[in-house]
Amino acid sequence: MLSWQNITVQQFQDVYRLSENKTLDDMQRLEKIIAILFDKTEKEVEEMSINEFSELSKQCAFMLNAKTIPGKVVKYIKVNGRKYFIEHHPKKLMAKMRHRQYVESIHFSEKMIDNIHYLMASLVQPVKFGFIKMRNTAKMHEAIADDMLQARFIDVYHTAVFFCKLYVGSIATIKDYLNAEMTKMNMSTEKIIIQQALQTVMDGFSQHSK
Image 1 (tube, rainbow, N blue to C red):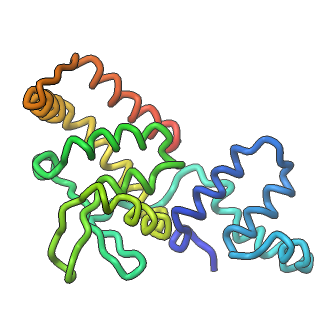
Image 2 (spheres, rainbow, N blue to C red):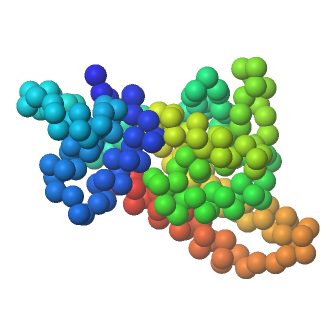
Image 3 (cartoon, rainbow, N blue to C red):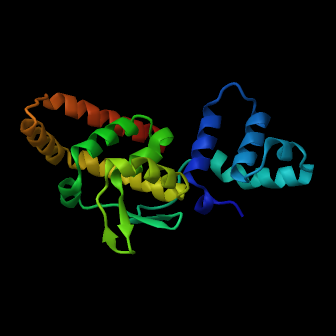
């Protein structure tokens, strides 16, 4: 039975894009959604019996009428035989985070649903041998993002939202950290730019979480 427990990031993104497509009528949109969620071709959907089409339509209803997305923040995401750790403690997070990760997070948060797999790929740590937390490196980003597409959406979504709230809650620490890093590189920036960037991130998350 279809439920939030077995919807992947990729499936949710595909359905979300259909909901934004104003060129489709309701029936066309429903046919495409059924194809996405039940891994069928559009031709296979067209050839379904009326009873089968009606049954699958009912199973999709929880996504189409959802006002909230169930789930909770997780510390680990397991997907494709691999395990990823997400640091939740503010001080530990800032100690581990590289400037690259901060910049990527700001960029990918601008369109949260479309880029949530890239956002998470910038934040998670691969876990080796079940318990050794590896450093997040730039060369891993694309491969991790591909894994995140197959992860459960409810795990990725709530963890990403939690991170963004943590981000804003740690704004003073982040500003101090960035200023220190930029000073090392003989760079400078105004605090207002950082504040505006973080506000942009949170605006995007709030709009999608309503």
